[in-house]
Length: 449
Image (cartoon, rainbow, N blue to C red; front, side, top):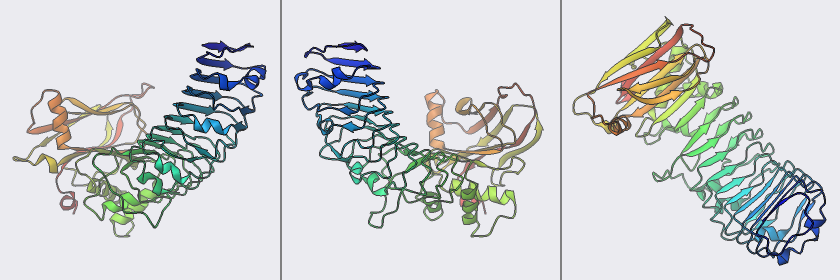
């Protein structure tokens, strides 16, 4: 094992080589790497002047390779893309690197980071069996599109393209192969207009109950106008997407009772989208009042209320009352108390699987933490509250009963829902202004007529 800066000799039996701020490059450039077959780990940091990674084909035991802040690196030898035992490859903040490899075939590779390589324009095709790759980070590079072979990375769990401002196309076709993908980060991709890119030759999406929702971060994609048909159930972060006008999946909720809501959806920056969704609910007739718009949006969201919990946030007005079908609802103008309880009786012989609790909060001011309790058990909390935000939370009754039973409680004949508000960090004691409500959803279409 060797760590250091001023090194002039490397033994052939070396296992680990970590060098920082290398002043002289003669050591690295003059090594006979083919004789270092026992080397398992290489880390070179801040090696200014290092312009190329040499032929490493002799490093048959290498498992870890990292080059970070090597600002003069412009070339990576093709042998790096064929290191069979390499598990982790990190090339981060190598600012002059424009091309990594043409093709890579690394059957043991699990992690590939090329983040913050500002000038990287070309990304390689994946050859052969690379099912081991789980984490791929291409954030803050200059790539314009992903190679089609990315769809063959069947073991991929996380894909980050954050800050790729030249990226214009993320084809939906690749996601049919990425069935294990859990996280997709596209935040700050300022040239994305439609996601994913449409294709006429794709089969219809299949929503498997064995797959968790794909978490998609589209924060600050300011030119994004449409989220089109997607082959997986997704949960989206949409903060800062002020140009967003259409979300295909939300529109489908109106047409299909089989469609389910997103797990979490923040629409507080998506005023155009909310206006368009309200128009869909009112058959193209613009809502005459804020109350009609609020009722239309809530009706849409709860039309997707099935057997899974979800939350939605959007911009509203706290002085607008909740719809009439919120049978337990209150409008507060100047209220000092910070706890509000509603009681919901359970109908006899209830089918738990066809019902759920709908919770809604609107507040005028940015408040401190809030919590929601059901029969004394905490079900939700939020540390901060955005000004004039509407928060909606749907919880299936089977979920409520399961969580109560985990606390040793039998199925109740009444739900006591408590909203508890704290004070913000400034210690302000100003009164609350807003409205709160809870409702037992059975058949929303009947109740909202």
